[in-house]
Length: 309
Image (cartoon, rainbow, N blue to C red):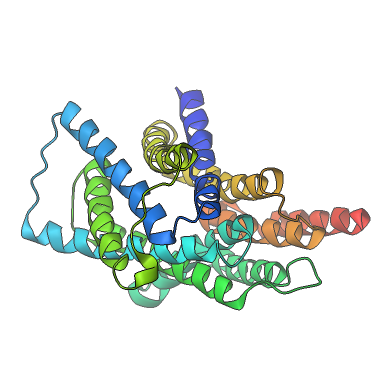
């Protein structure tokens, strides 16, 4: 059964990493950010609703749960809006990689506000993440990435980190399927409201069959499939191994950016990606990662990268 969990964890990460594959073609056809997100979440809500009905799960929630779910919905919507807006300003693969510093932010929030002890691995992870972001900011070494794009991704990561902390610290108890259904349901209405904040953000119908395909892709692959496969993986192999396999998310996004959309992948970006993923692995593995292993891994990467030059 462990093999089943590992396969599901890998597929869940890969599915979530395909967000740019669905979003960028819609942008190319002139569909704005609010419309892309609205179709993603509305389709996902319908699918999740059907799943709850098939499993005969209750949709009832109380007032306290509504408050928590409302907060989570707002946080998730803010995270998604800033993340998708960043695609218009920078390479999607790099945006997805920077976003993956959210576990580092979670550790910081828990230490500052909930008095969790800061370990050596936590400090090392933060330094690695900052170094990786600095390398990504320099792009290909000739031109810098968009400052606003970087800010949007960092805000997206922060909103998602707070989302995770709220889920962890709240007293709400319900299935992940039901929680996700209501979070996305609230997100859908937040995005609908967001679409009317400016005349440039009105909802647009997908202009072609190709656009409808990618809208359905967003609702199914990086949302529904990722959720279902992740749930199976957590049940089969546990939360920590599943989270480690989640490191494939930004790698998938980078691969899509390079192979499908022709984005540049330089040695400097490779080092930045490795540093950020190392930071995330440190947070996930914690005390199981030793200083000797860290220094040996980093020095090996640096030596090999220097030879590539």
